[in-house]
Length: 640
Image 1 (cartoon, rainbow, N blue to C red):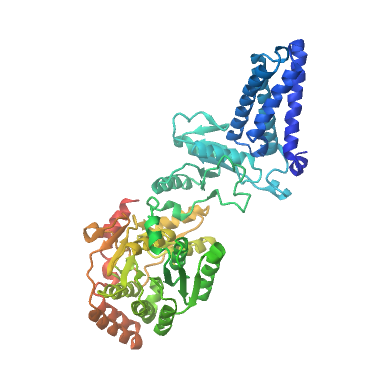
Image 2: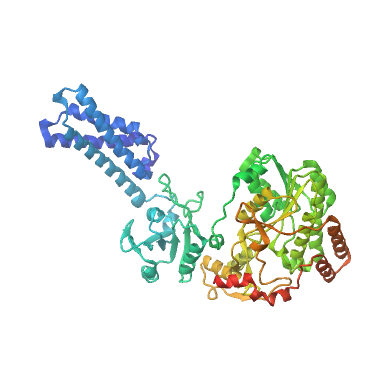
């Protein structure tokens, strides 16, 4: 029967007819009970007024099965106004013998409204809980295995989530209870589910057979999310997160069965457990700086470069040029941006290597960019230790070629992406990026404003530890860590790209900017969290093995933000390093030394040359033996 109503072309008329039948039944009952005291003409005028007001208030435009509290309030208001309209018309136009008394009219309006509400409640209940086809189009949905879950947070978010989980026959979860620390709610019921305190939760959840816990509190504090994740995941529960609240107009969809909707109940991601609150970006000023400019991004197909392209595309540039040697990466970002912006974005892709000065110069001459963001680089530490000359050719001289071309062709601003590994480097990759910083800082007096921006590791970038751990977990382990003590600073890719662009917008010539990466993260804890997110228990289901530090690797990266060595900017996350650059001639001498070593030398010769030109380059063994005494390692130890 419900399927028939679903396909009716004139659903509004059918709903009106059902309400009219209910009204007729009410009128007949009224006549039978009250007899001659009821005037039929008065009844007709009364209900005509009610239906006129319902039509005006849009009651019959609402889809009943998705009706919200607001829709029901409009129905009550419409009937109340209809009653007032009747009283005004009756006392102005109808003879006394044909009028209903005010109290009788009020009673009939209230009873009619109650009947209409009951109709809709009954329809919703049947549709949501009893209709065999609800929310699924195939019999396969009825065979979905349900997981018993507890919902953390008995507030508005939790209420709507529980309501939708109970109503949807194709969701993966059956709510059993709430967990909340509000004393006013503990021991009571919300949406017919008991509310328990966190202190007693573990024992009760096990008795109820709960396997999943869904965090449904509007909590933006990362430390609080980490606390909840640790508390329940370490007790063997699969911890999920409720990403967004349901609105009154769309409480019918849940991502567990509709793949076209944005996920709502999802797994925890490692980004959810960053040890700081989300970064606030000043988009307005940044957008104004890049709007209407021609912008070239080297390495634009990489993980950082492609995100910078996405962010810049939002700022409505005059033209965006992606330069990359890897055509697959460049193609991917090209198609993504074309799909999103179509002809609104003037996008060009150039396949070129920054190692070829003539090709870089040709691209610069063709497009004459206003701004260059230099993200092209070899960044994998162990590979660059083994291929030292390639790090010099690509990172150092590639940067030199782009800098020279930018200066020659009148680029207004040049922004180079650097790394925390350039601070007191212990490997060739970090030392090569420090040399790149020197090149950028040496261009004093240039018409082009040159700047560099340092930040640490980005979550999920190519070559980072996150994808490696995911692959190892998917293969059943073990997860390998070079040293259980090792720490790193992390930032999400969008955060890093946004801060780079904001720093670039405020930068002046020769300045070196550093980004606040927050607190250090122990890689061991990162691995344990990722294993639990995948539904396994560390060391029991998937082992974690220590394999020893790789060549050139140190236990910690330098704390970028040391306030006594930095100047503040208007953004609390961005600082300026007090570092005076070298002259062009001084940098030229260093480049000559590196060029000779890269052209003719073995890795050992290249490393000696690098130590000669980068005086902060240290042997990793020397640094690691005193690592436990550093501020960075102590901070990480205190966070455990």
